[in-house]
Image (cartoon, rainbow over all chains, first blue to last red; front, side, top):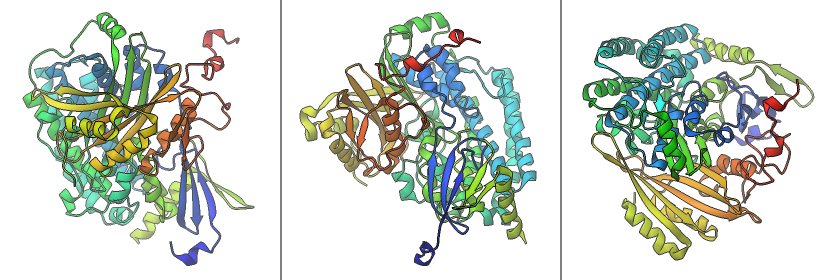
Length: 410
Length: 177
């Protein structure tokens, strides 16, 4: 911030409670000097649904389906992290085959989520044709999810002590076919996102999160890895069958040899993770042991065990956006005594502040979107001057962003 | 980077430093996958008077411990907070989860802020204030995050006593059309 600029009057720019990038509600209050963002404040809670409170009045099996509805995209990670926490609190062991099946579902969700994000990011800077191209590819992932679980979005595959559906030999060709389709299209996506001049101009050097800030603010997921921190629960503390599989941390220097922590780096990390997920699914199919898919198939019996269980446990999972964390305390009653859910965005809110400071208004959508936030959006942005009041709606903000791209393209 | 300690050494280092103020330590080992990888979760109860020093001590083991979140629940006479840390990330299989429980008496439910040590703890501290009615001393931003401003003062959703939300609940079948 140069001292000259601070003497000028700054403006307050409240954005929200809409999400400027995704279609979810969160309120920002920016302090603007001309086109530059001087300071940011975030207010949350516009879509607080008291899920934890409700979960303390339901039994653990009912909670699986409630947890599934915390997030539409991470509809596998939340119930699974809850199941992990309950399994540890109650001392339930999971069959080996289930560990592998759980990895396949988790990685398929990661592919879906990262491709969805890549499409949204393209849309934010005005490349709607890229959005459609990406989502066309993503559609295959949804088809495969439906084939494996019976549902496209809310998968209902989780069970405490395992999973609900097996993947049999006759299902392998379909999975291989879809994975080959992704591999064939990966190069196309890589070229569009990483080589395109305009994409680079909009994303390089924008929304920088330094390594130190990321560590101090407890950021997680691709957001931290793009800042060069090796932090991935799949590797740090391998749950499921991740400890058996061959893969490594994805940081942007793998591809470019340097770490900048900008939006471009976050695109790199997510794209490379899609490739990694494809490899992980293939490894799982090759190595999957025979056996049961769930430790206790009779739900009434399982519930009776859980009713008697006393203890506390944590469930940590690397969701597409970062670490999902669930804490469960069972006290020998029907309902859990305590249930705490920590979604990755919870940790990635504070890192927005250093990312957005010093950027332009037109960069808000792409920078905010770059952490892949997951909340939920209405439709109004107001630019407030002391005596005048303008209102900018979502379309207007999006138009500003598109115009900036067009200017750069000239 | 300082030398990585084993789980037993970590527990010992805390016990040596804080003696009787650290209670009920346990090391949980969970296994996963065909290779039977071990996941290590350490749990400990810490007296409120030394809590901040415990976090400082933790920071000598790892420069930037990751604070996932703080859980909290009402135990009747006390409120318990569980701080979920993880250290030694960045090397495969090496990360250790550390869960530190602190008990606060209900008549005086205060705890010191750790945002000066770990700035990322802000949101979770704010959340505990509004959900459990505790007071975090020295919190840099003393306002609500998740609950809206028009929600009545003095009602805390996670409390199980008279400060809880029970009287605000209306069951759907009781509401007149």
